[in-house]
Length: 243
Length: 191
Image (cartoon, rainbow over all chains, first blue to last red; front, side, top):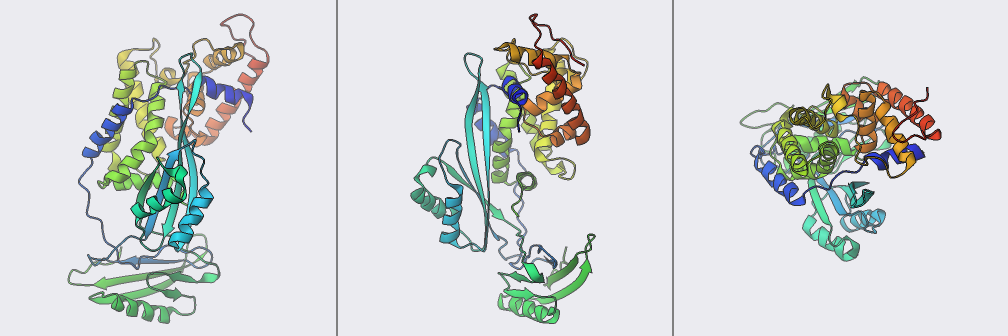
């Protein structure tokens, strides 16, 4: 529990001048102009898997044909003024029910600023409230989602939705079973050959053009947990071994 | 398990280094308050504050590709750049008379010159009596909101050492304010 002394120290020391917002925003644009040219993203086929939890651990590494989508979901951040009366759980429930992602995870954080008032007192300014939601699964039209969210939660009006594509995802279930939405393959301790066959069939069904290879290796990680590594790669004209 | 904010920031740095403007903007907006606050508490002139903040972020952009998440958090890394920039600035501008070293320059953040009340005045007087490196830790924790781990990263110490130093300093300050110094400006230093 924070003591009076610690509270007094914060109040005495933490005040800072408010930023020049015009300068701040101009600097942002100036800096963005200095970024290197955006690199063309590697496009992973939709068989990239995350790492499972519990006793069974599986990972898939894929070499890359050039023309398959990589996005696995969205990391969304709903940003509103801190003083906004929002119910993050209700928002998460709305997203879950409306968009039915395979997985949904949420975190809420606050960002505040302090400044010195005209009489020298410290004024703590309401900052921003960030509600971050990881939604894994089907692609989501985030513009449409924002409109629906504001309709459903009018208190979000004036806020903004930030969107970042999720590239990897963590899947995990108990009991050593790992299932993957894109390949719809169940990789179980006792069905390595079946899993290989399923993966190859589904790669073929998804139109992979070339020679597909699947290798499944059982091992132990440094903590002694069972680890299963599933390596999938496709050879085309320019062969690229798995990373 | 939800990715913690620090690892999200590491991912944003990596993507910004690859030219992702949106990732950079998200990072910038998250870090600007911390950088501006740090500089604003230590540099007197508003124009200098804005110039320094700009300089810091230009350096961040220049070094995005070199950021190593195994060595520091993103916030720690950026505040390290900020700290160095402020030290260089203060040394050059000689805004503080004693310019021996970094901790001395950054040690006391004291915008409330005499404190609005006797207790606060006594606390600030007690802080001034602390060693320079401890005063900087006090400022980093209570003014800038850094955790002990982040302070350790920034000043090149260990978290255990920072924790110990802070605990000792707070004990001394608590003793001090239970026995406030009656004479104005003087602080009785209890052992």
